[in-house]
Image (tube, rainbow, N blue to C red; front, side, top):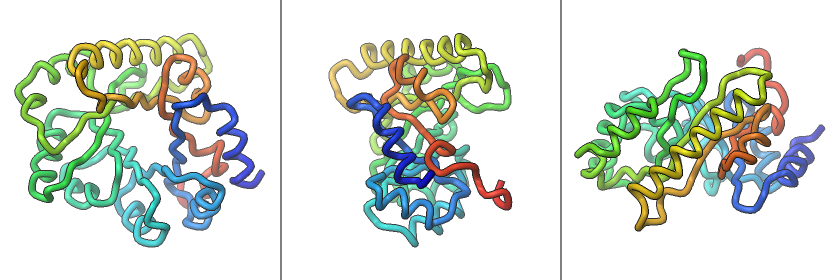
Length: 225
């Protein structure tokens, strides 16, 4: 099925207020351009070199999201290229990003990645670490780095109740933070959870942003997997 048809099928399932990020990592520029011409404007990349190449070659009004594990030595390169970093997974990374954002005089939006899955291989803050961070001087001293929400990856499983429970727990945390630390500001507004196989469950549990690759672009080219 053509990418444009895939997109329209997905858009028809999204309630008002839920945004779609097309996960374009490993897919060629031509596929992204096809999605762009259909009306998609937000795309997610997880490798810095691939992001650099695509950002240079594709239309400038694309809003690029970095969704992979970000290494400290890549922060300087990534900040000018993206509209949102979805995968901030440690206090150390927050400090490094704030430092670089100050140097570049650039305000940066980001999501904190929370570890909600059973797989230990996935990155992210624990729930306790999230609460400790928001009570810290590091959070209160941020000036250029804007935390606009949370992101989470559910366990890769066919057990719908496991997935639903993980998303529900993340939504509960999101609500706690919004009422506790962002009560008087509107900038904490994004809950990014849900991918091709579980985004409908994520939406039912309160997601405001879904990250979908396969259902938009099809399977990744074998040579790039």
